[in-house]
Length: 211
Length: 211
DNA sequence: TTTGATTGATTGATCGTTCAATTAAAAATA
DNA sequence: TATTTTTAATTGAACGATCAATCAATCAAA
Image 1 (tube, chains in turn brown, orange, green, red):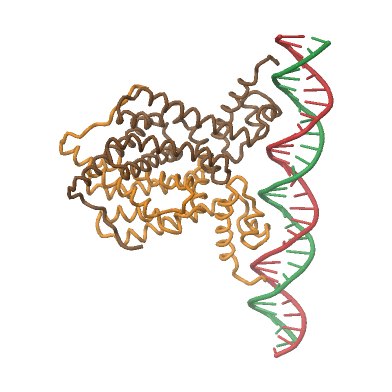
Image 2: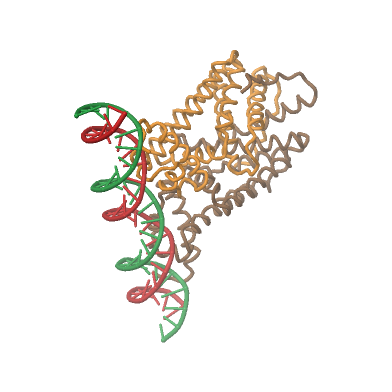
């Protein structure tokens, strides 16, 4: 079998196998042997190309981040207006291929793992900061900076929340419903903050009882 | 040392130690020995009271779900109006004691683990369904059923999203900022859906380019 | 013949789990 | 009260299984 120039293909299939294995076995219980078998190679080869289990998992995470980022970047390049840029970011986060059960399982695991792994944490923070920054910038067309920052953080939270709640559902992912939920948030927030700014008497949330 | 009636105390401290250990080591790398040491007992005792590592982790999850549920129930009992009930649910989800780094780490791990563990999945689904049901019921005072259901799902997503994004931050958790974000969502959604229902010309989200 | 790809048996360490032995509080007995 | 017996709590050493990582041997394309 040994043909020349196998490395790229092996790396690709091992990373894909890692995502599937996490989906099926769970991040904690996944073994190199399972991943390798799924990729159709021996366990030794995974070490040969990635060095260690940790590095394979890290490479998988970088791959997912990269794919998501590329998808969003492509959509942003086509967007003509600030409002269209907002929609591009939102839709990019729920692109088919990303918003799949196996990928969701991997993301969840990485979020969990990033809490104790500095390298993973750094990656996620950079991605998250860029997302919020992009959102804030586009929102500035509609809102003053403090409001834009608030809504950007809210939008990022809503996106992550829709992702995480996917992990609990049985029905197949519904990107359109997900997008609608986030778009509704953005739309309503723009209206609400504008109304507040214009001094309209808007009903305030009930503070409830003190804790 | 052996005094009588230690079981309740040991169970409590072992569960507390489990949460802390997950926080420090990460769910995957946590060992019975570490948890036991943190609780000040031997590894054997953890098995004596919980049977296995899996059962200890499951008990910890049930404990967290129970605490969160009790907190919300207490707040709901004091709420007088539908709007106050909404705020009670939201505030309950960010109660100090729940909205802590260690607890967040544990929740994240459980969400990830629930994907492959049917028992954990069932627990999370039941909790999630109850949350959405409570939200929907209170929202019915402001919105027709389909809208109420949508906003309830959105609120649950926003709560989960704010939680998960906590895991990425460095600064200590800020319950008030978290509550404000979710309250803003609810408030704005009620206004938006009412405006749409009353036939007002509301700007629609930019559909963007087809995927 | 050379070279990179690939394997699979092996190793070494880790960790969940078990269990026989030990401790000291509580209960029973003298 | 003093002493013995009982009982639950607790330990820590030992076992067995799992798995990441290594590496010498093999294979086939160049």
